[in-house]
Length: 537
Ligand code: KIV
Ligand code: ZN
Image (cartoon, rainbow, N blue to C red):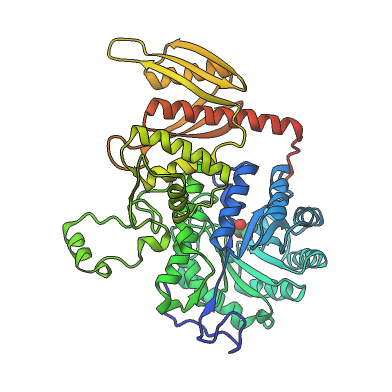
């Protein structure tokens, strides 16, 4: 982190600064665009809509919903999010060419507030090897792109891709030209995660000092995490005058990912003394949205992940525990409840009613519809019969199973019986429900009951898969805890994820597998209705 003091806003009545001198930082979330480019992070339309609603509830200022020209799926996602999500500005990405820009605008038609985000690489490496264009040609194309977008939409962001590795004189020229052409936000990406906080500070300082019209646009940073410095670099940019941070939930994104939203937001808040900034983020929603994204994408976070990791507030050493008992501030710089970890943990039991469950769900950051509440409540009652004490983690697991599952449940579990042991072939008798009909198969094969369960599901549903990843973990504590199983399977060259939760690990596996099978069937039927034409990127 740089030691330089923050540059003051250029005018005392700067619109982003309140009477007490605190600067408002815009949070631009790109989980659904750059984040979705994470290997294994792709989401279907209904999943994107769930994440988009959670992002709106979180209070992001701008939501980049996708890259509409990239695929019909991306176009559809931007269109649906524009039509349904209210609050944040909805943004669509486009390269600096007419086709991309027009397609982005078409997808954004129903947005309450729309933004077109145009980008063009500016660094010598990209100019020479990727684009084969001169500096003057780059400026001309950037200006044309911004002008075309401005003719359609009054909120236009321009990104100089690989800005962190662009010659500073040239970057100043491009930025000045893009603002003159009408860009209202200028984004400075560290596309390959190469820069350092000191360099980032200097780059923003140079832009602010050398670009004559810089005050006509909001300055934004967009950092990748290849060297683990995306958050630090974003904070340095803020200190040097950036008023918008581009980031993703859990830091998901290309390669090592993007700047993590929860980390950068909590750094600004916790170190208000240093940054003197504020954001619109409802921080109590950080843990719920982090968990939701893990469930939907299957991309787990490490236990010690800052802010939202399961161990982020766990104190193991006796000295720390002793200090905490005397005064929390000895070892705690943030309160767990401020980021959405619950204060109490042991909550409900067999006799708790629906209203208590709804209350607890609300406190945990979930607004359930009547139908969702009823399903979660039914599952809760079944669980309460098996397990005396129901913890927050159990409730979250039940809710997330409900809200992150595929929208259509083609196959569901009716019943199963399993037998296994040393020196015997495992066997499973499985009955699945399909519409009004039930189908039963008995399978005696596999190297254990879980493998046998896989075979049985395949046999009944007829959907053949190759298992790529299989993980089991407990949602809470104790031997009777709910077990969460996540799998990644491959079917006809495509990857699908599933998630299942039960106190019985074989049952979790069957639910998980059905979850994936239902996704495969639903997605295949959607794909057969919309022909996908791959675009030349
Ligand atoms: O990393 C990058 O440069 C980008 C741009 C498209 C903003 O994601
Ligand atoms: Zn990026």
